[in-house]
Amino acid sequence: MKKNVLFAGIFMLSALMATAQTGSIKPEKGAFLLEAGIAPFAEEGSIQLQEGQLKAVYMTSDKVGLRIGLGFNSTSASEDNGLKGDEKAKAKTSASEISFTPGLIRYFSGAEKLSPYIGAELILATESNRATMEAEDYKLVIKNDGGLMNTVGLGVFSGFNYYFAKTLYVGAEINISLRSKSLKHSSTETTIDGDKEKSDPPKDKVKYSEFKTTCSPLIRLGWSF
Image (cartoon, rainbow, N blue to C red; front, side, top):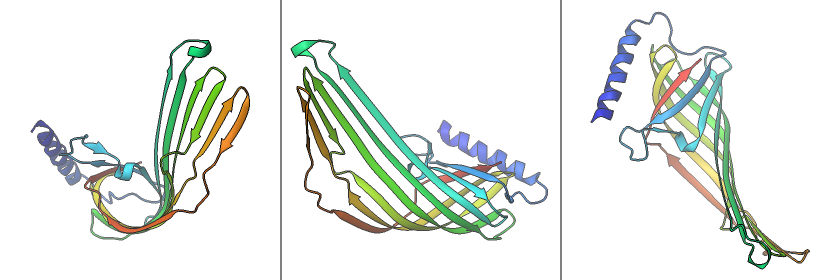
């Protein structure tokens, strides 16, 4: 309840601020826009990122901008029993996900405070992981295990920004994307008494394709400077 009252208060204050604005409140050439998503009723938190990405737009003119989305997630863990000799045992794991979506966006006149837009973007993403286990005179390294994918695709999107105050806006967006995903090959390297042996599975080509529409259940909140 308190959360809903807080959001209502923010939007009421913003509406009052908007009435005091003079001239255009939309960003112009050279402006830099950043945005996040607001999901007031989500259990995992109110402030989220659309598709897990930071989204930024650089306005090359009053109507055209360069948009870049960047998402990343990296985790690692390690364990060491602190013993030596035959009882030595160490393990380390790491995993990462990276996505990058450069694109172009075109804004239309709309209304005084409303900017509808369309755009297109290139979709690039990759996943990786690594596990290392060590003992006395033994080491095992496993890379890209578990069916990890590389993704390449193309997306088109459309939405709107509503500027309720100078440099501040809310909006919504839908998009259509075509993505091709290819399986990354895993590898295993074993070292025993200094001798290395590498094992690679058959390099069969495994690909998936998907064509889908998306609408994130978020209120996009953005600002420019």
